[in-house]
Length: 187
Length: 129
Image (cartoon, rainbow over all chains, first blue to last red; front, side, top):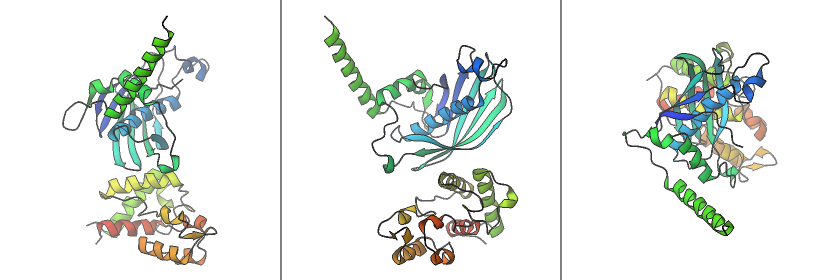
């Protein structure tokens, strides 16, 4: 199972800024279990959503070719807490980007008020981690589509962000494999 | 062109934000690892903040030449060789290597770099009045 800590992107400006929404629901396992008699969204998972938003912003800026990992949370402040029925808006902005990684400032807003803010450092895994694949590329693309990244995403010149060719290739290969598997199973 | 005091103040802000230390803990003589508790991933954070604060680009291994420290050519039995020390001096003209030369153990290298060294590095990139 993969963790999904945002619901979808609302805005996505390549190399600059991304805005995502997270709806907090009592149906989520962690909400009733985290603090007895006080159903709140754990701060660590709000941070996860903020990092998720920023990490994908960093990954897209590198054409989804780098293996991006959360390296460090430099500073995090919580000003409030979120409960079931709340809608969190995560905004991430790239402060610095280079071949080694990126520094991102992320915020969470609730009802227009700042509820959390963090500085997050992301690193690109280098040759010391050769052979390690973080995601199946076709599955990764499926997640990005679910997040509607390619529906709202724009480049600095206003043109839409297109699905990278290497991801489309992976998706085609996965579809071919699935077709062959289904053909074998059909009577 | 910034003054040396302005360079120091910006470096101090970068270190306070990256390392979560108090303003008064950051002095020119503070060592990055020993006094301020910087770990390897913090150096990436610090590089990002210095680049943003001064509008400069810090190429990989220019500020922290870890390629020298992990090179079989320059390190033997855990110590930087004479040739390695020459290379470090060439690559790090902003740093005072005299103390490190007394015991050039690789593990001691992180303890050598001071806030003043960082400031000198920044000045070498942007100049100062």
